[in-house]
Image (spheres, rainbow, N blue to C red):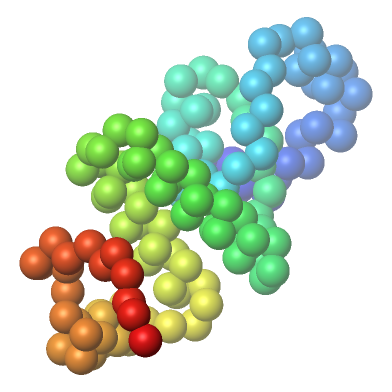
Length: 127
């Protein structure tokens, strides 16, 4: 498999760009899992990607988090929860935290404020 960065440069060949325009083209413009370009090429298709970093990567991670949450809310499937968890792992790492940090904070908040085991729905508070 070619390096992903070199795939991006393939679009500079004018003949290839013309062939690409004639082919069925789908625009995704979204963050994808690491093996997606490889899987696309194994299927006999061509894809163009770019490697993100810094703020651009964080912005697309946040978009991916929203996308996966919306997919879970629609399907309620455990597969979508797994996708959401995978993106959460990436966000935690990209923001310089560790998964252990996240779990520790979650456990501390649970000890102080409880979890959601009792299904409590707060309606009003009167002062």
